[in-house]
Image 1 (cartoon, one colour):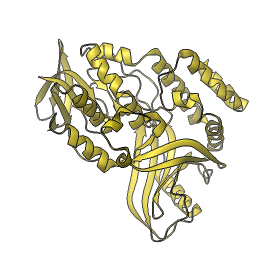
Image 2: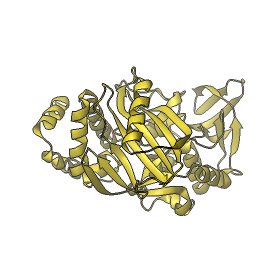
Image 3: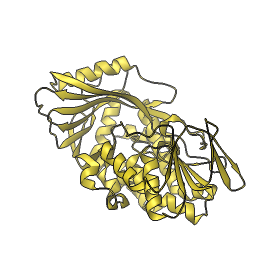
Image 4: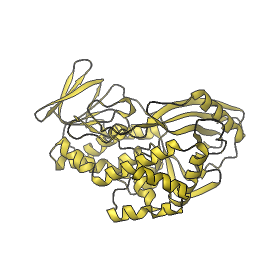
Length: 394
């Protein structure tokens, strides 16, 4: 029997396995995935979120990030921030972790069908009828749907995007030291609320994405309109004579709901476990931050899944999640121009404040008093936004 099984081979699963095999190497680990392969998504991390992180003891910071940028927001006024933002080098990230964990865990390329429990043993049954047993199960199946995790009934939201990785024939004039996190220019031409996300890897290689911040789970935007808006944005930046190297067309969950401790048969990590920043969809930085805590809770509570969930999903984390959910609901109701203006105030007054560290970077190391006091920065917002937020709070 295994001590721990991990389902999925995405970033959160591999990071969890990395921490476990290094810090508790004497246990038996199995990781199950229907397809072990290098990641293809563009993963961004706010460096403040993983400052002095455990991960830099095992992965080379200079190799982990293909690029590190200053963050810029255009609303349409240009707002320069004090935050640094790194783009993960997927090839290095994936292969460096496999090199460390490869001989210390069993890798099984199968598709999991269901998870059950008898007494203190979990049974992970695969589609080929193979069954694995374990004392504890982590699940990192991402947006594809949980097998053993059950959720509360929160309203769900997704983020949609269409992006081109382009190669230019001639160098462009974009600043390669800056990532434009939100570009609301050229954004008032349709009923689809979308912004630009622009990453210049160098003067001749740039990722342009048109992103719809959030949609209710049962809706999705018209991709043809997104394609037209993306083309207009390329024209606005005078991007011509280019080749599209690949296209990113996808969606990510912004929330999955807090897992139910009494009815779940696995502990969700990454998107599957709602370890997501609800306001943005960012996951890797948040998971790097909390993986040591989660793994240590497993042994503190002697593999008791319910106690691990209750200890991790504290009142403070639930509070932060629910406040951010109010933010999602608010932004979903705002017309595009108002959403642009809301982000103007948010990034002008919040991004360099303690409230940003708590609500956006999910820093849990704050007292209840400091958490509540951090909301004072919203007093700079126009009253119409405060009134809207207040209505949803009360």
